[in-house]
Image: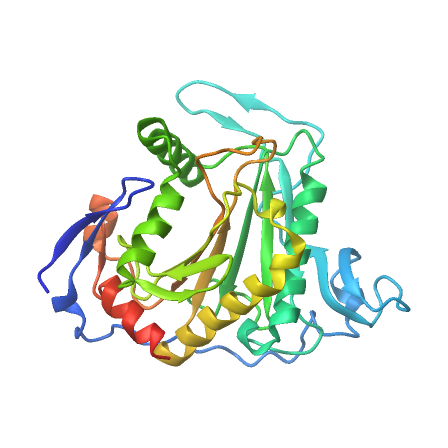
Length: 330
């Protein structure tokens, strides 16, 4: 296969698919070595080390900040952003504003486990339920506009602790990447009177070459303009713009397909570092007909080089068609 420029149908972002580079040295090299941790603050029984929980899914006969929980949410002890009653902004050439927001950690299980994929699909459904609950809570704050839900796995993925956890950052601003997707989805809808995400699902199911898994309510696929080798995305078949609007009885099914995606990635790439990101519409979006929430999952198999930084165009050495075939087979 020759190299190709490909354009993302939502954002218009370009990538280069360059399969001739897939046997370069250092590709898919694994994670950085980690120092063995002697103390796990997220372990059940260590609740006092994390600060008080803001939400937990726990046994009915258990009390807050004690044992008996399955998923636990606490404020990040080293937040990237914090709530403040004194919000200031400065316009002009060097525009800036107070970094108002909330930064939370979702501890995904009470026992030590590095891989979310090793938990049951129902337990992963509980993690997703915790995501929803926190989004619903923060949506009530009129100062907050958008939530970024993400998981870092491994040192190269940005995780500072090995115990399985994810994070939520809720801000008073809608960030650039979110605006890019929202604007792209809106432009497509205005031109075609259809959701770009619905058209992607229809086209991908029709060809099946980039489909990894298809369930009743969700599709798992390798995007046409994948930026990263073995990148995957989960898209709901129903037109829902906010993750928290997803019916709760569908979360176990979503847990199944997320678990399957992670297992496939770990098998093909031998337990790589990775990130996944829940893309959801800003709060108070009023059922957008064009944008659809989705989960992007990408392994951290290579480093970004000079061309990518200078051009903004990422080179991917594994075509999504080849990646999907390998992932389907595992």
